[in-house]
Amino acid sequence: MNDKGKEMIMENYLNAIKSPSKPTIVLQTILNLAEFMELDESTDIKLFSASTLARIAEQCNAYAKALYYWELEFDNDPRNTIELLIQTNYGLQQPEAAEGILEYAKKNILIDEKEDWYEKLHRWKDALKIYE
Image (cartoon, helix red, strand yellow):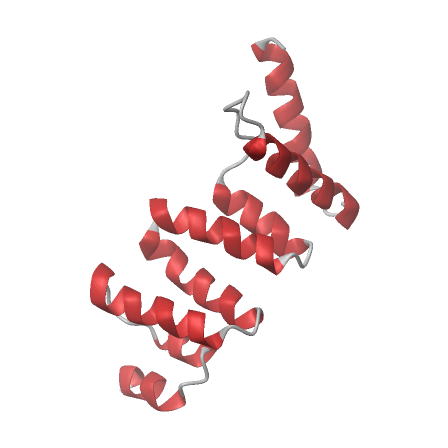
């Protein structure tokens, strides 16, 4: 396929994702296509960034896929994905994984803790310490 055709397809995908009346089945199809292309060794084309795919997965309530894509995004941008990983892990009822991400962030990324992180983990005393 030529570059013009690829651009047209990408534009149509983006329009479908941004549409306020999009059915979930369209988003699921886009996720499946992205997953297929990721597994296909003969192509290195990526339709969307990992963060875009994670957001699409969340809209489909496919939280395990969202977690996968947030973890990929974490490799590229750990500072901005910590909270999303905590939230997604907690939503998947994996509080230990969410706690692990929080501990990793405190020790290795050296950023200021946010009270929101502790609130999402229902660690009210720790959140209160940061508020104070």
